[in-house]
Image (tube, rainbow, N blue to C red; front, side):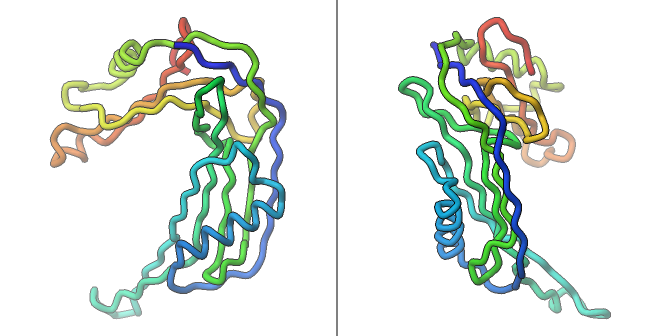
Length: 205
């Protein structure tokens, strides 16, 4: 298995502030408003990938109130647009603190904060990557009490660091999510994510 190495240059970023209002979440409207905002800034290219929308919920209890007096609301809506790059014939998601657009919107669809960490990147050559089985075994060696865990999910992604980190290329990595075999023991064995460098001959990042 081979994957194209991806070279990266410096990222671009933007922050914007504004008013905020609380109200019932409108996931569809929030998504549309966020995408329109990103397009107007020229942020939505061919490498835009998965869009995630989630509400920032609040809860309050009046002084002296009881459980049934809990007031629930939505402070704002968070929208994340993850990057997706073509590596040869493969489309690979970009994971990490970089390679993403983050926006906060109020209930009226107004963007009150936005940031983008999106390095200029282009494919350059190919690198050989480890077989999945070999990477999984390497990940298992990083898990204490491995018999108490099972593999729940895995991903093959490109890793992009935060804007303040110097990065010459986007690294290919395997991500493995382990969960406890016994759900009742989640306190003793919390879920774990292990990242393994994918390039053949490389060690865990």
